[in-house]
Length: 74
Image (cartoon, rainbow, N blue to C red; front, side, top):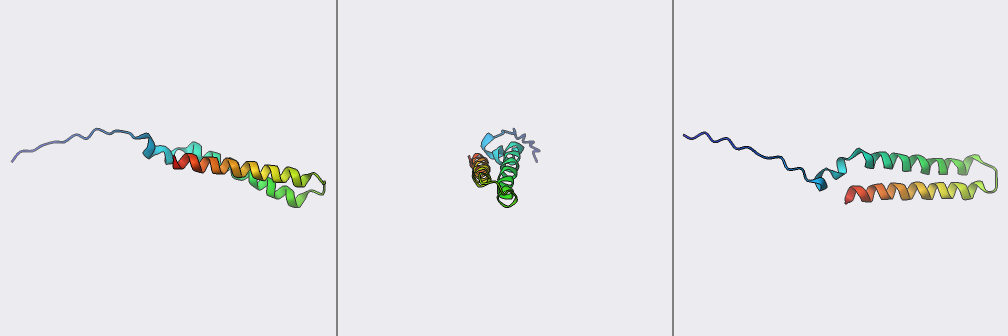
């Protein structure tokens, strides 16, 4: 009986490992922190412009998180 040894070459496919990249998850955490600061400012401040600032921060955090998720799905 013949004993054959097959060697498999490991080919790395960038698309398969894209979701495991930690930079995507760091970006999600940064976006969540920015968004949560925006939500927190809505309830803390009494300044009239704080609503606009909190809405802008919340929108920026949402866009950052959506960008990270879309990068994962690529």
